[in-house]
Image (tube, rainbow, N blue to C red; front, side, top):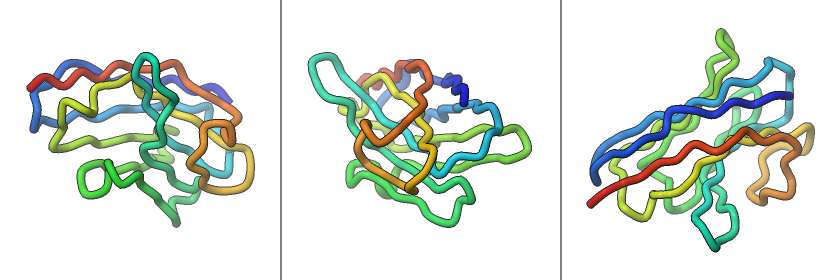
Length: 121
């Protein structure tokens, strides 16, 4: 499974950004978004099953972020609204072969390169 993340950039607090993660179309168990700032561990943001029947969000993302997938173009999205300065990070998409949704980075088998999101206050 090859993943390609893109869509990051700079935005003011309160603004929105949509991240995209193009995958190869191979069926996996779940896909997710993590984020990381320098000096800290990679942090879970959101995940969904391949079929889209289950989604799970970190508390920090609930009500502001939405994970979704478009099977027509094999792309997973992370719509981020009401952004805060603390959302500034490098965002990564990941895919898991089996086992469904997980919130730990070690559970994921495939990773895309990161895309930077910078939120200025």
